[in-house]
Image (cartoon, rainbow, N blue to C red; front, side, top):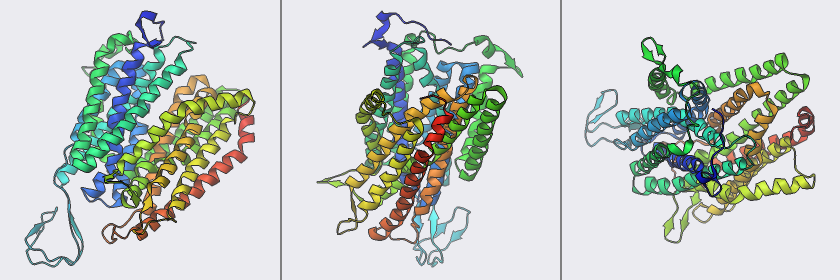
Length: 537
């Protein structure tokens, strides 16, 4: 579907009204996504009494799938469904998934080794321990039925995001004719919706979930997605048919007696079983991601060798190096919902007067900083460019990764100045988020732009898919790194703040040096990479 010229009477504040439909839809979709993301690990470790390692594995598998499946959803929308049907179907799945997240079940109970049972206890395998039994090992009783619902909810969410996420962005691009100077500012407005949704979600859902009950937080996220779905449905007339399928007749064709459109929906529902299993088996997700990423990378380079010029090969190799470096950046950055959230919950002094900020609400800092700094950073690059001082793309990547490392450096420094109880001032966490955000602004926007400029035009879609596969792999790598500071909650007193802080500080120091080291390496090799880009800026 190609973009069309939209009458000025159908504009609002200088942009097509359809932009604001997409803005609101994405705002509420991100509200639902971030509303549950920063609650997820706390919910698993505090309510269902998962160990840190177990909780991180679920978070890693979930986040890894969330960033991988949009590659499939984008292809299905391009070839068959069209963007409108894909977004609506994805939105419905997301609503169901987020609302199912509100099903808490019974809170898990832990009986420590040495406990003398006051009444009979039935284990999950049906074994009954009589009253008066002295436990030889620690036993946890979890609500397995509620956990199965929880895993199914995650499966619905990752599948829904796969259909919705890539296609709502594409619709925005279609609203502007080729060469329309408003396109960049339109995307700026659209991405502001992402950050507004993220900020509101972590503030509202985080507070409701931790203060009033997990179901309230997850339920609020589901209501947010429902609002987004209704907004998109009622705003269809402002999309001017741009989100419709290229060839609607294909959807009416039958496969084994069933319309192809219905086959896609049925296949998506059938895939929920696979996703349900995969969110419980992070190693399978991790291995699949690595395999697909290697195949995609080799395939792109091979294509450039066979079909492109010598310069195309050089550009593709540079792009693969840049994409590989993003795995390091996002693996550091995505500690936010993992080890940094647990650190905030257990070590950071979150008290302001009589009010206590919840650990999950700290996730709002990234979105807040993005909203405050996006335009100044964009202006900075223009100002530097006019003076021939604008860093090359590889240098910006290096600076971004270094800042991610320095963010952990702030936490390492902060750990040297605990209060009398062992808690650390929240200012250090705020500084860590600030450095991570400035690093993101150096790397993420220019990275997406580099994909479109360095890849051969005919495979730019596959190159973008490879970028997101790398992000997906980084999510699982992030949680594996976070497990280095997994606290053994069965045998560790979480009230011993000094000991808990020391465990996290060791991880953060390691991540600091990884970020600084890889960032410096990228800057050192930037002249070579810049030559390989053959003038692409």
